[in-house]
Length: 187
Image 1 (tube, helix red, strand yellow):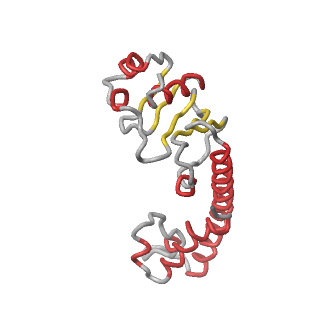
Image 2 (spheres, one colour):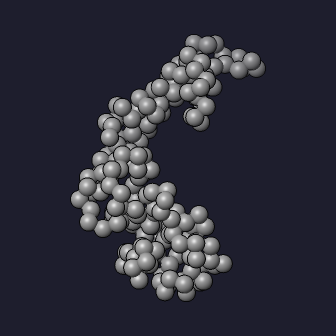
Image 3 (cartoon, one colour):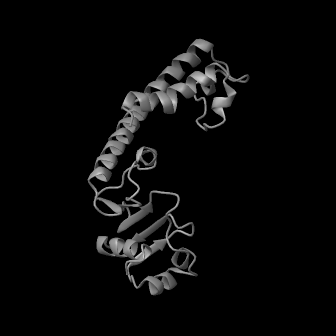
């Protein structure tokens, strides 16, 4: 697990440093553009480098505010998820809000927890798989349409099934848990 500073260092500072030092082998795995460099005067602009630098500082200041907020939220989510996993008695976690979970996955030492359920921002509940070896049954993820998936599972309030088997959505929490039990062969 990491703290907010370690997160920001790994996800952003090291990238900026690698860009500045032309460490191309590191940059291959990153897609964040060098936005400060984009603030340099273009050949067809009539502004000085000093003015461009001041504009870059303003942009960087706004970016840092947003990025720090993001980093704090991401680290808090990792901590909450890992604490919940350690207390979990089921093969799934339930949260009443959607939160970033992808980075928490690499810190999981518990092989029992395979799914995470979030109250969706849109409608119902999202059920996501946490481990690569776990996905939703092909019979439902490759069903011709949602009605076929509903018929196969017996879950009438199924909203969505991802064709890759990594995400399903239901209208109720009860149905989300029932879908996991179906997928685990318990129904």
